[in-house]
Length: 232
Image (cartoon, rainbow, N blue to C red; front, side):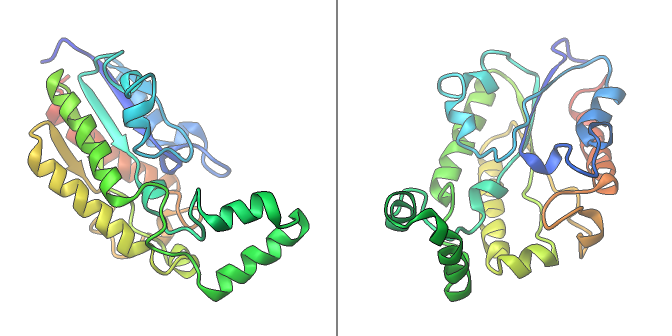
């Protein structure tokens, strides 16, 4: 039995409430209700990337060292790896912000979508930066004897693939990087709650976000793993 009862949860919008998903339906809420003896610190944020882990609070301290949790549950990555139409600081972005009149921008975006689509080589966080960010966080977790439970990036729905055909290859790549990192740090436990389900279309409310049933599956897998890591 552990004395440190602090668990930090760092997630993106996949695990957050949204239209059709009440907070009470989320695996985070279920976890809080069923692990009442633990102090669960919810640091979820829409659009979260791995950059938070090394910047928030100065070097990422507000997601680790400031609180010294016994366990961190980390579920991010889709914002990091999703193929984009434009480079964030690229020439086309400059054109749309500074040159092209606002009324023409929607038509230009439609043209780019039709002409080339989302490019798997253009991402919010490039693969090697993602690897550095997760490795940095894992190393810091080991230093304070904190367990790191990483939930792998959710597989894409058929709707998501129809909008972004290359997203699966990026998800697979970033998940492979996570597996490599897990092999390097003994503090890491990996989870992939929907791994054995061939199609997750029926478990999502849209192309990306899990529904009430999906949250229950996540909760069961996470709680089982947490019970093993931190016996009550």
